[in-house]
Image (cartoon, rainbow, N blue to C red; front, side, top):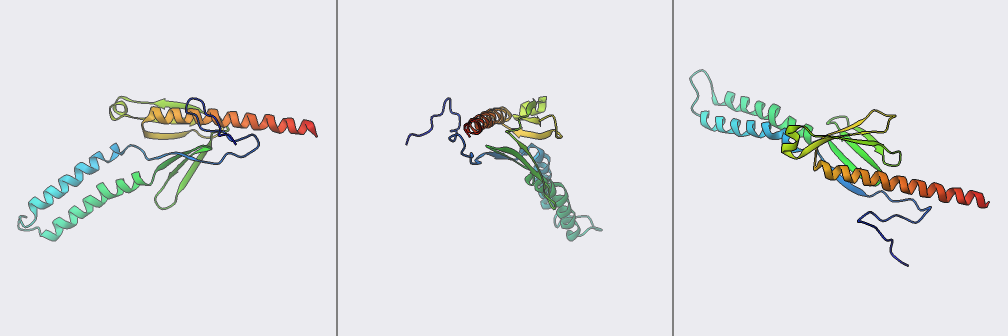
Length: 184
C-alpha cells in the first residue's frame, strides 16, 4: 500500500468516499497585550503595599491596606486574566470554533466546507504588537470576528488552505457519489 502524496506541504487527503477525520490545526487565545496594564497594576500594588505596610498614618491600619490591595488585585488583575483565559479559538480540519464565557460557555462554529471570506484588519498598534483581527463571513450567518489573533498572517494562510482543501474534498466526494448513482 502506498502513502498518500502531498504537494507543497498540504495535508494528505483521504481516498474518495472515506470521511476525513477531524484534526487539530491550531488552538490559541487572543494576544496577551490586554494584560499589560494588569501587570503594571500588580507591580504597583505590591510595591505600594510593601512600602506602606507598618508605615501608615494614624487613622489607617494595616488590615485596611491589605484589604484595599486585595480588592485592587482581584478587580484589576485576576478578573481580566480570567476573562482573557476563557476565550479560545480552535481551528480544525473541518471548522473554526470560538468559545468564550466564564459561567455560561458560548460557542460559535464556522465550517470550512461551506466556504467563507476572510478579512484581515491590522491597525497601527496591532502591527507593533504583531497581531491582527480576522473576520470570517459566509454571507448567511453573522460574521465571526477573531480579535487580537497572534501571528495573524500564519492563521490567515492556514484558514485559506483549509477552505481550499475542504472544498476540494466536498467536490471530489460529490463527483464520486454522482458517478455511483449513474451506475445503478
